Image 1: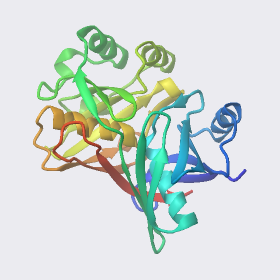
Image 2: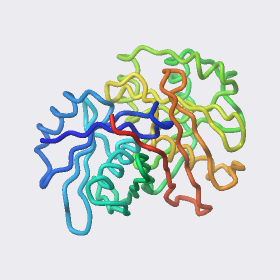
Image 3: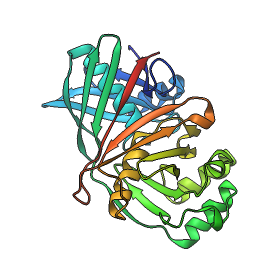
Image 4: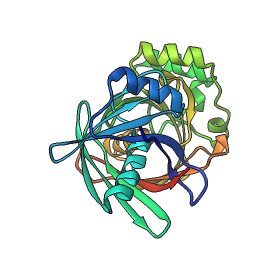
Length: 275
């Protein structure tokens, strides 16, 4: 079985979040997909097989299946473009149907996904207090312009926005405690964000539920953040740019284009590189 390794949301030939990609005639068994994802060791591996007018796709972290993964979808879009040429590919996930566009220009690969529908709601105070304690923050660290929220764009995330870039850089937590927190509250990740401007955000994305301390680029989290900003009336001017992974030494860049309709899919795009 051929396993491709592609870094999504890269900056040229550096950075990005590595994903495994397996394109097969039929999907392997659940046991085999979980085993392969653990052996690959990246935060997610995408498995795709032809189905009807597109592709059936499932995503596995080293420890569990996840309903949707943005960076692995970008990696899959790049892999499909390499195999089938530039195009828009229909994907059937466990709970949604989306598309990914893949294209190649010379040695450069790029892809753009259309997320599942988005939604958000205020986060319960008790959940926020527990999260602040986990990451070593206090209420005064939060940016009051963007209240804590539960945000969804194919997967569930807790979103906390911080007043300062220094607070974001200082994020620390214990992996086992983070895993218990995320599994107890059915969260795939926690999105920690800082607004440098109305349209430029810095983020970090703990992914303890999948056994990963932190992801350097997270398309699903970026889509959820973008949908939330639309929900609260943030002046995003139609889109945001996101820098992630900088504090890990793996600078990555994501773009989210935000249509005005509440709940509508968000387009998340970026470059990709073969590893």
